Image (tube, rainbow, N blue to C red; front, side, top):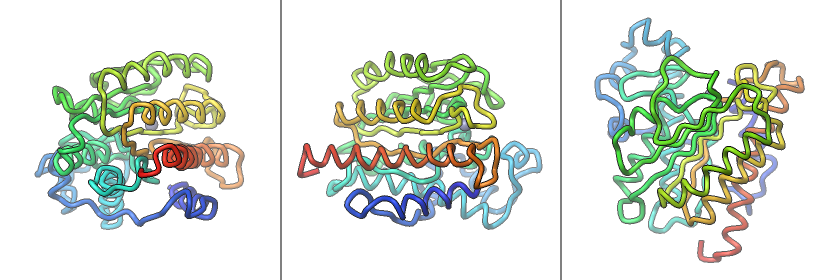
Length: 301
Ligand SMILES: [Zn+2]
């Protein structure tokens, strides 16, 4: 958990105000949450009434602090979506230094995910910015399948879910995304990037999204304790670059979220911790510089 603060503080020290502006994540409203989550589940979580079994599946005990964390983890992604979708938006890309909680379903959570931030933010954007956003693409590159997001938007024509994940890294249940790309354990940079490159341009051409969410989990890293894909830091940077370039080429607004990343060693001075945290930071560094490039090309943006 300490990685969240570490990544934010390091990015705030590093990124000049010409490249990025930082805002505190607001808490999501119940009205927004229930666009995709069942009212009963939301109110039972907020009131501390989930069963022991439901909490065991989520992976942490209930406390008022956890309620705030779940609400801000979703609220930040909603705020980032507003920032790029408002009629007077000055940003095309935005990032949330948390979120990517893609294992949350409409009526339950699992794998450290209580609410599905990307699903809520997509539904809010479609409701509040209907004039500018009619089609949403979710590019989920976490090592785990985006099962909650796939389930929430199954049969919803407005949101296309694409998940690039390791076939051996599944949470409890696999769902059917609009596109599932199963990658074998130990795939490495070259074959991974080939697979991404084979699908990404066609995806953007087919969906023609006005808004794209990038779940930029770095549990694909070779220094990750859980993920089995064994990508290098350089490979993950190439992955990010492909996603940002595709969104830019197709004129899609983009929101990047953090997703998984579990260093083999939690000691902040260890090389594994350093590599995983730096990979999380790369996702935001690259988002900021891709945005700066876009802004130069289209000065009104
Ligand atoms: Zn993951």
